[in-house]
Length: 143
Image 1 (cartoon, rainbow, N blue to C red):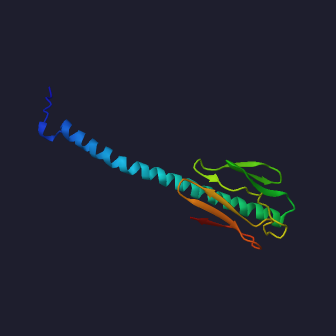
Image 2 (cartoon, rainbow, N blue to C red):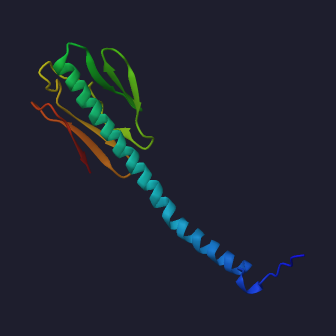
């Protein structure tokens, strides 16, 4: 018969475990809000990268084909219409458009039909997508 001998010197006490749990809780209390803000910023960054890709896609569709193509910005989303196939892209929850916006469409030569600045705001950041006159590409300004 085998006897098990428990060494009381090698175990953690309840007090030690509670102290470690308290330290972990305090550290997470400070880290979690900043992680949430980081996630919001990453969602917005991803959205604007996708938006830029969609603009480039619409421009190339119009430049190299005779298909109808435009982006229709609305309050909570925008519609991507290559050849009248509606694709709906939602804005992140924290992001809102702040000005009335015309549709984004390009001429046969690949230049924007209506030069305009599209303004979007979140809780602490303002984003402007600028389409300069006579240029084919837009650029994003974060303020």
